[in-house]
Image (tube, rainbow, N blue to C red; front, side):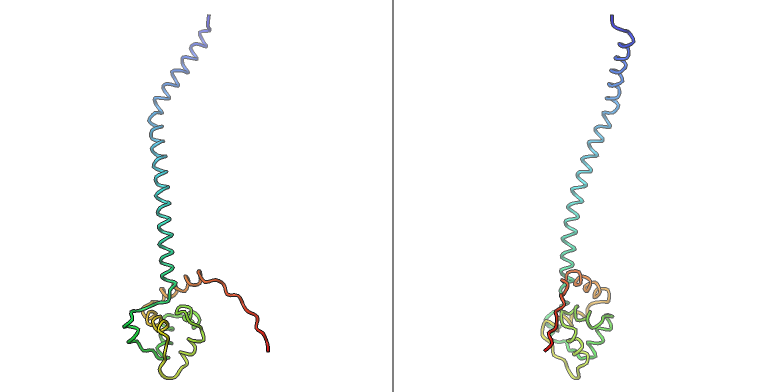
Length: 162
């Protein structure tokens, strides 16, 4: 004859399991729904990060280019040494930073600023100067930062003495 105590324990366990199962059935469904929601959010976040990365790269590529202007604006524009210096000072840039912004050498900026008489420029350089007129201080700094990030470090070359 089976022990009545052990039979009671088994029956209590069985009833407790069925009660727990019925009580947690709703929680299981909620947990599964939450897991699906989290997976969906992760997919959406990954897509948004991809889009953001693509847009940042496009914006940086746009900022990396030298400032440009419309062809007729460039044609009409005239620059003297004082105008170049005034533009550089308005943008609060050093000669080397101004040169990097326009995509020219530092010595070119120095020559422009110290020249007497009218200045002549290559079309691309003149377009960059006209485009730089439209920039503000913050935009010029931002463009320089982007150019500095993307530019490879220059190697110093040894000079040969003759």
